[in-house]
Image (cartoon, rainbow, N blue to C red; front, top):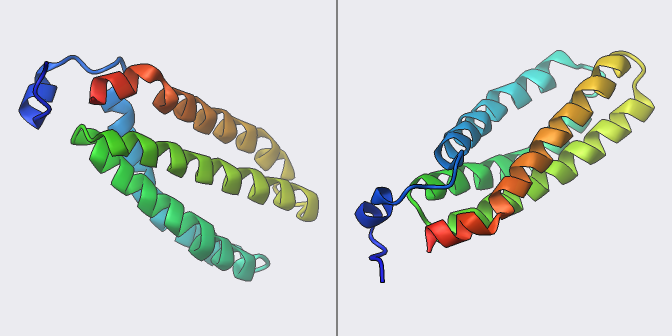
Length: 140
């Protein structure tokens, strides 16, 4: 049986895209914090709504995502579970926010109608990647 030490795990070949997506997830989660603040500051009409979404949905999702990415980079099995939960939370927030904004706000509707499905597709692709059994087998 293989040793579960980080050194022994580092010698194994991770599934294709594992490290890249873990680092990309960490970078995007860290970028989400200032970008969320920028959205709050730039949109005076929806400022209160954006503050509520930022504090109640984005901050917990980003915090969970950062911890998940760090755990994945350290080959922790529970990092996969956290990544799945964080991506599911992100998808739920993205879907709800975009649909409500598309219905209620007229300006920027075309850009949001193009950008939102692209973001949803990327989030779903990341969710499918981290749900793969190969990831769990690698982390065991």
